[in-house]
Length: 283
Image (cartoon, rainbow, N blue to C red; front, side, top):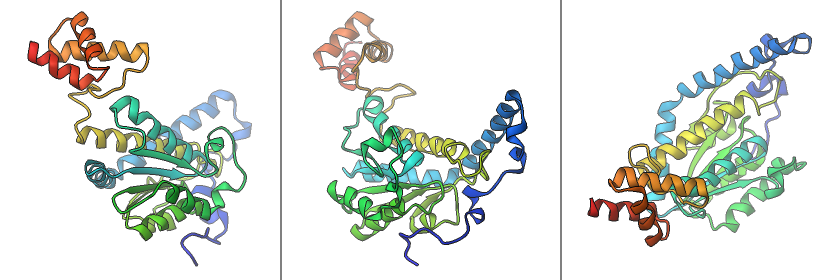
């Protein structure tokens, strides 16, 4: 069977489709009990992510290496997984000042799939290959394919395309034994167990994937020197809130008054790291 094809196993045999005994009577619980059940199960996501920290570290090393030599990082997936991949990629330019073309989020069905379900998009393996080739995926890049089940054809095709062109291959899935995990150099596979609503991987599965994504992006960009201490020294001050934050960073780390920090930022076109360097020369 091709790695780009979904498995033929009955859904109940898959971890992401299994039923949870603790929520078997969910429709008979009152609201407080429903909330308590969900909250208790969310804790499983935290534990599952803790168990894969060594693999997350290996992935960060790969991501930092690729970005440091000018390569690109692609998050690619379908449905909830794809939306979270696009979301995390979109946060990197304003937070860390990296150009948007360096970390790219792709979702099955295109931008419309960010707002609504696109029927059949996750099963379109050819679209994944086309999406990555349209972006000129090459051997200097890295692909992080996301799929809670680890069996989504779109995500599987993304890793197959990465393999074909010699790009690095990472996977984020909630099934360590899935085809997606097997196709990756490093598989990030938090085993969260059955969902409160069977098969609804927007819940624990989505939570665990979100946790891993923000760990990957934050640790990678810290490693690349885009943060000083715990300050966003490369943020893009594109709003009033961010302009105020940039001013505080330059003033506090540069040892100058806020008025001077603001003037330096204007002189540097809003580039926080450059304004900070000038402030330190003056201090």
